[in-house]
Length: 288
Image 1 (cartoon, rainbow, N blue to C red):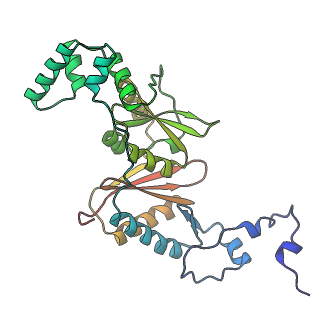
Image 2 (image 1 turned 60 degrees about the vertical axis):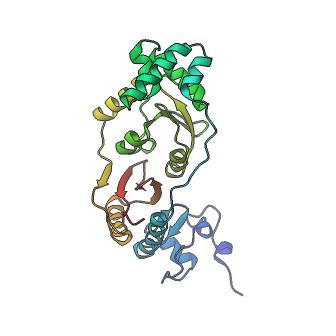
Image 3 (image 1 turned 90 degrees about the horizontal axis):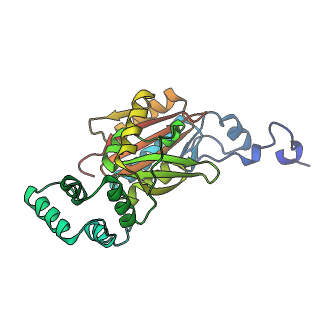
């Protein structure tokens, strides 16, 4: 009579979770898919998104396929609700008059640059508080203006170049609801929000914040910079990126690798224990 491992291992045994170990996601994995093999490989393996690879070799092949897919696939397009122009929103709220709106539009057209809200503030027709409230109404999301920035653990931040590109910063994290509020200066980018949900593995909620919040955020990060972002300026092929990422993953003893595409950038996040993260930013090949 043969006995299974489940039968001979007690529930309180340190090996009790053996049957719950993941199987390698590589179709060409050279290791036998036995429970014991998966047990001994549990500290060698690494997660790629929601797939687990038992060794560096299996992870390399899985990562290469994932990067090839990311380079050939256009960034996810998330439908945005139709929005009323900001000038009309401010007019409807009674913040400005129709004459002030016409004057601001004429100055904007003549200069060929600047946002309508910026021109209204220059004219003295609008305050920054009124502009921020109008943007929140236009974007259909809440307005948050905390007295001081909340210092968050490392995993809730993203590379500064993405902060600049999307004009968005982490504002408040609600641990009870596993929800992160992401503060935008003006336009909410829903495609970036989708990427954040995948990369942070958390729900996110957009909000509008005044300009001072982003200024305070940058000051906070400047004085508490941990150097956890590496930007690769030269364009690399999928194979070159795979080699670079695997090298960093080995050095960081990474347990999870996440991949997200932000326009022409590829954002890689390597996670280790105790919420230690390392972000890598690549420029995608022009041909993609």
